Image 1 (cartoon, rainbow, N blue to C red):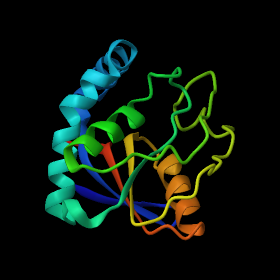
Image 2 (cartoon, helix red, strand yellow; image 1 turned 90 degrees about the horizontal axis):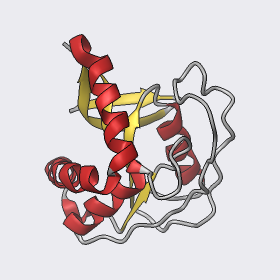
Image 3 (cartoon, one colour; image 1 turned 120 degrees about the vertical axis):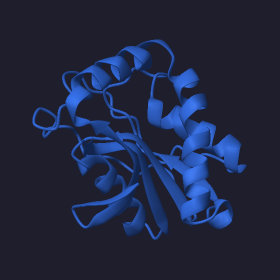
Length: 166
C-alpha cells in the first residue's frame, strides 16, 4: 500500500508495477482488458475490498463510484467492473457519477494531456469510495476526487495499481 498525492488530492494504491518487468505487466494487462474485464475484476475485487476493510472499515461508505474510463470501449471499463466487484464484496451500490470519456489514441500521460475534462453527471451523497483501476500519472483520479469533493461528497479514493516498486 502507498498513499499518493496529485493536484491536492490523495489516494491509496494497493499494487505497483514491478520496475524490472513493468512493460510486460502493462502489455499483459492491456491484453486481459481487451478480452475479459469482468473476470479480472472478479479476481481483483476481493483483494481491493479486503484492503478497504483493513484501512478504513467496510461499512465506512454508502456508495462506490468508478473513475470514468476514456480509452476503453463501452462495456470494457475495468474501473467500472472493479467498482461493481467491490460493491458485491462490500454490499454497496455503485453510482456511475461521471459521463463516459470516449477518446481515441494513447492513454500515456504525456499523450493524454489534451483529454476532455470530466463531467459529474450525478450527485453522490457521501461518503463515497472512488475506484480507479490504474492511476498512471494520478491526474485522472485526482480530477475525479476534486470534482466529488467540490460537489460536497466525502470521498476516499483507491487505485488498484499505481507507481513502481523494485
